[in-house]
Image (cartoon, rainbow, N blue to C red):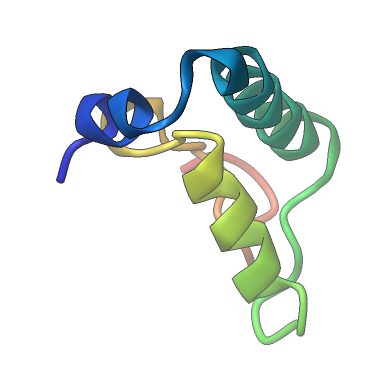
Length: 70
């Protein structure tokens, strides 16, 4: 199932809320530093990053446990 099919399953009245949720998740990944490797926050950070649609070419260059892009 792709994202378009999933969003089409939502009632039209919920689309702005879904879009706002995606944007909010993206803002979290922008302003919150990735957690250190082995931290209990790695899984929640990855889940929020996935909900923010940071996948493929849009994936953050800094991953949990890294200090700088590379």
